[in-house]
Image 1 (cartoon, rainbow, N blue to C red):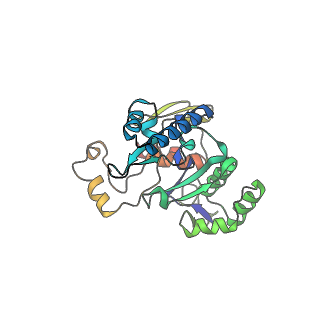
Image 2 (image 1 turned 90 degrees about the vertical axis):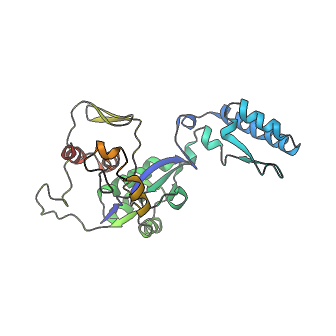
Length: 272
């Protein structure tokens, strides 16, 4: 059986950029504005007018985020935000799934799947993998969706540790055993504060997340263990089990959303 690694959490992105308010709507005007800014700045740099570019960065909206001048003072050059259209406007064909991996720290070292218009379908496959699925069943489902998710891609994900080969659950195991899939339950209507600005609202079996920031499980380096879990960190006072083995509730919720929320409520209740 195959299962999405507990250290991996899929994140929808647009090219190099996370989905944020400024690039979650189709805005050709913003793209045209940014393109014109870059063209103007390039002409100023070529004319040797570095002060003009710096004035743009100071006074023109978004210019400071879009570009900067490097190589000062000997050889000034304009450094432009790469693929900036993805940062300012939505384009479904540019969507992809970053498989955030808690065993590494740099996004460039993580697996990124450019999925475009098939993004929702690929997330459905990852949802199935999060709950555990046989290889043949996963590839059959992928073939029915026709999203380019084939055996070679699957083998690559297994080789990278994104998807793991695990023992199948024992169908004879009594309910409640660790290898027995949890049965979905229906949470009560209401709202729950998870932490920071993260609030979950539930009604009629549907959950809506407000401002979540889930992350995968982490493999902590010795230096991170020393710094993040030092005795002086205030979280030690707030959480009795604060440490490398503490359960990240938002990760549990996110994986529950991928695999179906059954069992997540139970695990969270045990921690309350």
